[in-house]
Length: 326
Ligand SMILES: Nc1ncnc2c1ncn2[C@@H]1O[C@H](COP(=O)(O)OP(=O)(O)OP(=O)(O)O)[C@@H](O)[C@H]1O
Image 1 (spheres, rainbow, N blue to C red):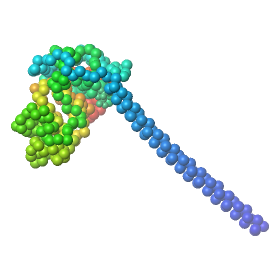
Image 2 (spheres, rainbow, N blue to C red; image 1 turned 135 degrees about the horizontal axis):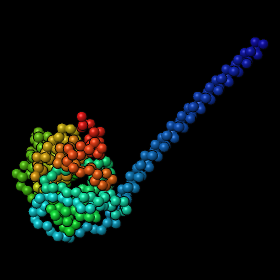
Image 3 (cartoon, rainbow, N blue to C red; image 1 turned 30 degrees about the vertical axis):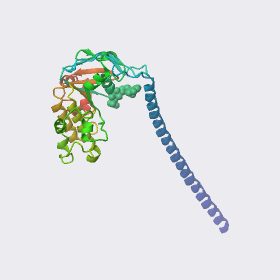
């Protein structure tokens, strides 16, 4: 009897352990499999996203093979001092990239008066950079873009591009000296170049101790992103064009450098017509006018004060959600 009870007890313990063991084992196995599967899924998603990016790059590269070679010297030469005033007019301007039927800019109609400073805002993909690219005739647009009343489509392409200054988000610097970078065609004397460097605020930023000569190479002075941007502003100051475009120049800057860049732009390009593409609303809230783009169309264009009166407007809601409104 005792023996039988002991047998039954032992059997139930073994069964219990066995069941328990199987359960723990199963859970462990399931977890491992789930973990591996998640890893695979995540890996797959990453690969897919990368593939998509690469396909877009290939698509864009293919687009260039289909584009006609630009004839940069064809067209009318405008007067030497063009554009003296710096008035910009878009009349029914639309644009689609050659590989697509979708319009990325839709019937844009606006005027930027001489010396006006305007900000262009809008969500990612709204068409801000595309709008800027039309000023340089990077793509064939429909409608008319007039600068100082001349349709830029009929003007010589090199002249159009030379006469409008652009300061892009990523400063383009060559691996040469400061002089090579600021004046590659040797159009200016040392005094003018130093003066532009001084006006750009760069010497204030790096205490002036690092740049002892214009022949010093960019590599030797180890500039930060913001300082490189100031150098490209110095280049823009030297160019003395009446139209200046800034495309997200303060995007990756700390607050101090951002403020310095904004001040330098306002001081040095005061007599120019300036268009500023910006995500940071602080950069454009004090400008003469603001244009809000949405899906390639202008949804609002007026002084910031007027736009802020419309509490249902897009600019109002952008400013409100950025925390700039009390
Ligand atoms: N070369 C191109 N070919 C085809 N489509 C393009 C090309 N460049 C941009 N696009 C598309 O055009 C639309 C507008 O892009 P754009 O870069 O002008 O927007 P954005 O407002 O400047 O955006 P972000 O604030 O992100 O810079 C987007 O849908 C974009 O995918």
